[in-house]
Amino acid sequence: MKHYRSLHQCVLAGSLSVGLVLAPLSVAMAYENALFSLKNRWEHSTTQLAETQRREALKSLTDEAKLLAEQHPDEADVLIWQGIVLASYAREQSGLGALGSAGDARDVLERALELDPEGGNGSAYVTLGALYDRAPGWPLGFGNDETAESMFQRALEIRPDGIDANYYYATYLEEAGERQAARRHAERAANGNARDSRQASDEALRQQAQTLQRRL
Image 1 (cartoon, rainbow, N blue to C red):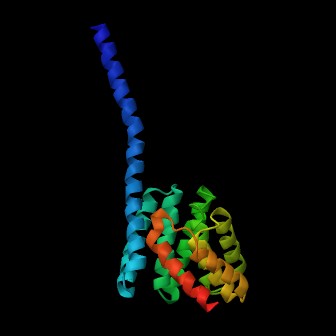
Image 2 (cartoon, helix red, strand yellow):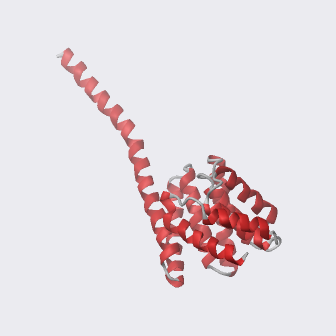
Image 3 (cartoon, rainbow, N blue to C red):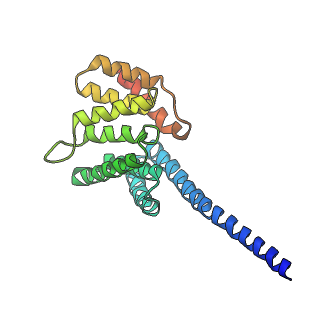
């Protein structure tokens, strides 16, 4: 009987150990599945939908991304995607609404960089660069050309052939009057490598980069 109790206790302890190991794995899988779904729907919304539908879809995604970030506040990839969705929604808005969403996106992405200095293989830096480039400057907003350029350059250090990093930096350089440098980065964007997880959006940016090349 003593031997039976010892065996039973061992089995019970083993079962508890397996449960403790599997519990965090289940949580991780759940958030990764939710994030994968969010990414796919963002990709579809930004590349396939008409303006009005796109705005409504992105508004819904911002709510979903916020909830996911509240559930997983220490996961950099969740925060990065919340920032990307917010930045995309800001582009569809106007006035104070756009500035508010852009500011929220900036704050979320800067928190993400504290957790992951690589910024999701440079994605956070690209989005921050675009936000600092497009937002109005003080006193209305947080726009800052020097910060925008430093963000683009950091993204290119991490992913020099990135279509997004090169395209958005090219548009920044064009606006700054640096046409030769803008042409160079537009060419790199046009010839860059589309990411497996961002095929549709990267290919859309490639087309815009080709248009920019012709204009330059």
